[in-house]
Image (cartoon, rainbow over all chains, first blue to last red; front, side, top):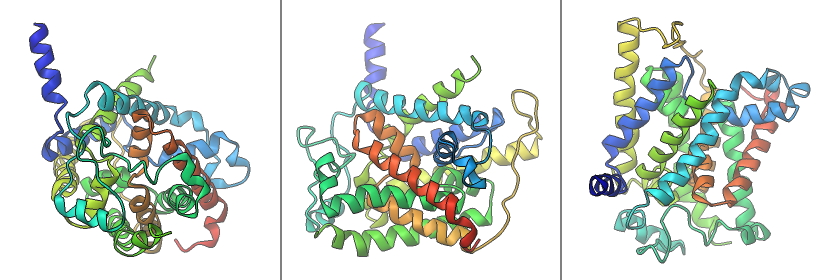
Amino acid sequence: MQLVIEQILSWISQPWHWAFSGFMIATTMFVLLMLNKSFGMSANLRTMCSMMGGGKRASLFDFDWKTQRWNLMFMVGTAIGGFVGAHLLASPEPVQVSQATVATLAEMGISTPQTLAEGRGFLPLQIFNFGALATLQGLILIIGGGFLIGFGTRYAGGCTSGHAISGLSNLQLPSLIAVIGFFIGGLAMSYFFLPMILQL
Amino acid sequence: MKLLKFLLLGIVFGVIMTKSEAVSWYRIQEMFHFQSFHMYGIIGSAVFFGALYVAAIKRFQWKSWTGESIQLSPKEMSIPRYLFGGTIFGLGWAMTGACPGPMYTLVGHGYWIMLVVIASAVVGTWTYGMIRHKLPH
């Protein structure tokens, strides 16, 4: 019995196939819908502003944040799930991106871990670390990047979960426009701006 | 307590985000450089199955598990807010390699620097709230 459990855990710890991942994400959205909620991860940013008293300063935050406690719990759960996935169901290798990506990143001075000793392949710690906050590059990527996400997701009224998954599943044209925007910004950054920022 | 199920669902989601590798900065660069099908496969299949679920809810008039009718209200069409907001978010997404879900997930991985990204995102949302009446929607 223990052997069976070990085998199941080892199988589930392999990186998942994209189709299974996509199915599971859709099912998460479905379960939320059946609980009369919606799948939208950036809403929590707005809720946090409301919790901090933002409702007195801007109408966007003028709502009872307690109605969003379910989403805050979901967010906390997501972090716990991250721990479970990363440490209890850890893959035997770092994230295997394509060789083309390894080369592209190398050109920008970023090394991609090939063994777990070099890293897990989730976040390039050479740029994302607390010391980097004392550098212009770090401030731009960490503070600037976060700011753009918080500003842009609320302006667009949603992020990948709200628009790319939920919105497109509901065949919403506005969500398609949002996703097009995501890619205009993402492509401009990846191809054009990021290489420059990584030179700083 | 009734909120527990959302915590549990969130835990499942955090595992999905991690095992799918959608939270990997490297995977996001790979995606924006079109160097693999992986991320498109994830989003595409999520939309495929998601659309089936939504179509089933509408077709069979399913009610929520607590008996209420499920909210699937159409969004009001507009170009500026979705295009500009989306582009601004996309810029940040490619910089950090994370959108909101992944940000929370990566904190769970132990990458505490993501707490700074989240804090900065909250400031970004706050700023939007303050100036949105001046922005095209």
